[in-house]
Amino acid sequence: MNTNTISINLNTFEQMNLAPALLNALNKMKISKPTEVQTKTIPLVLEGFDLIGVAQTGSGKTLAFALPLLTLLNQKPEARALILAPSREMAQQIFKVITELCVELPMSTGLIIGGVPSAKQINQLRKNPRILIATPGRLNDHLVNNKLLLQNVEFIVIDEADRMLDMGFAPQLKNIKSTLRGTQQTLMFSATFNSAVEKITPIFMSNKAKMIRSSQSEEPVTELQQKVLFIDKFMKNDRLLDELNATKGGVIVFCGNQGSCERMSQYLKDYGYSVDMIHGGVTQGQRNRVVREFREGELRIVVATDLLARGIDIPHVDHIINFDLPFQAEDFLHRIGRTARAGRTGNAITFVTTSDLKMYKKIKPYLSGAKEITLDPNFDFTAKTQETHSKGHRNELKNIKHNKIKKSEQKKVFDSSKKLIGKPLTKTIGSIDKPTKSSVKNRNDKYKDVPRSGKSKPSVWKPNNKPTAKSKY
Ligand code: AMP
Image 1: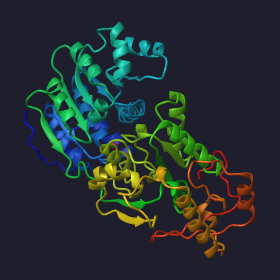
Image 2 (image 1 turned 90 degrees about the vertical axis):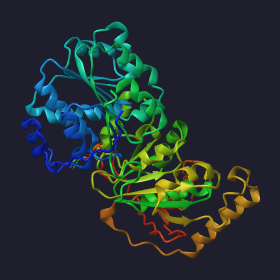
Image 3 (image 1 turned 90 degrees about the horizontal axis):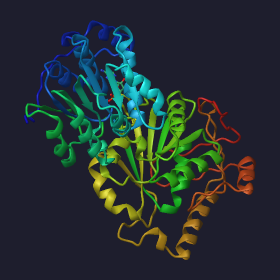
Image 4 (image 1 turned 135 degrees about the vertical axis):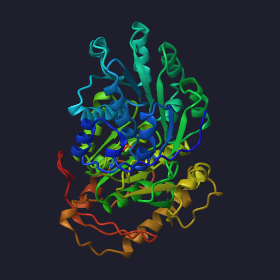
């Protein structure tokens, strides 16, 4: 396999020999200049090469494969294409981009994902759509009953290959490959090129495959501003409220597992935030609704597990809050890649507690340039974890917070345009608790600022300013 990095530079879409209808579609999408990965990828795909694209998240890789693929399908009316994505949301997103591109280039498409009834999909499949966009699990289910499903597939795209392998889709990928007849041009994209991806490449790719590496691949984008907060575990909930009150715009809060994701969502809802949650255990209908409402600005905050860390492209995500660290360092890169996409700016805040040392060391390379703020004066990675802290120490923490509240009793000047949420005076330390009756009463009676250590902006909040269910926050 030829894995040299290639650089063929055609600097405009017009120079690339794409189908003219696609240029019109790009115009309508207000996309005028190819990104780096598009500049490198499109000419090679049009020349017929198999390709491995290692591209930074948000680098424009969907168009990098979709534009040449549609051009080639347009030139070969009998050929079909299969695009595989690891999650239903990603498949839906690719489907949406392809539909937008095909306004003037009619091309039948089929979306084959889990979580929705098979019957409708079987009808779609009977019509032999030119482009199949699928998750590997559901496609395999259909292949059991219909071995001819992939007849005439001449192009395969495997998007987020590393994620697919992480999710255990290797057997499904191999089965899909084994049902294909003839030769296919294969494009494999991965945000990270690890040994697992390397292992499956010979199954799908010819030994003439080219490798493209976006110059910033496997690094966060420069438009991303990062902050690391070294914090006591029991102060995380409280600090989260501060951070949410101090910011505007869409936020994704990443939690470690489904349970904590649900509790966090409820916690923020109880405090009046415009929030919902998404994880692998909720129904497809709910997943779609949450992504749609978030995309359309009806929800300000989504609490998620790493299900949402990859590939989902929602332009107005301004802040990522890593409330819990991920279980895999690569997921951290994908999480922060949800913001600062396609040249926009964005912020990522990462909470690190004394028990996070192992993962913190692993994600450190992705935190270069991050502002580090130590909020816990006793922060020490070598100390015992917070669960083993004595009751005395916990009381000490409560006292520190109580004294801080006393020190600053002046009210904040409120900015009505910011629509911030009321924050209870009685603060939750430790587990994610619902606000008590007295805390809600206090919230409405009297508001006090709580100064925060470090140099970050002070939080501002406002009483009785709950957003309505459909507010644009
Ligand atoms: P992707 O990496 O494919 O998820 O794309 C990330 C975002 O970049 C999407 O919102 C695309 O619409 C946008 N995008 C892709 N290519 C370009 C481009 N050439 N110029 C501006 N935005 C782009």
